[in-house]
Length: 141
Image (tube, rainbow, N blue to C red):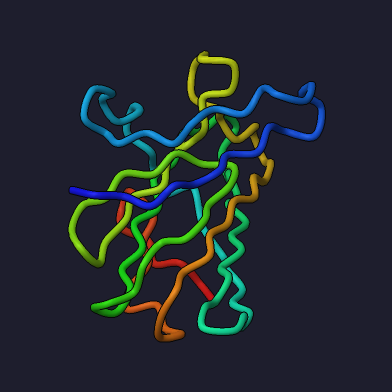
């Protein structure tokens, strides 16, 4: 499957030049299973011919959490940019976003009771067909 180039920004405390490239998913297994205790809320804003989705993930547990967010967009839409995540393409209209691996290390976990932002820009019709967090909970808008 083909994918568009993307960007992954380092956390605010990281030094410049420590961003990790997005994964094609061909050689890296998914992170350990996330739980339903991670929730996702997103906002959508319009750009000319595109739209931006900004997510905030919340960890409601007492343990650091991994996550996977599945986003489905309309046919013909194209992922243009993403940040603070790694992405794999499941189909022409479905993308899976997972924790970044800054400095080639382990996936970034959401701290207990904490939040983690990530985002993306999609070229095409301004619509999210579906959005779920691993474990089955729907994203809220």
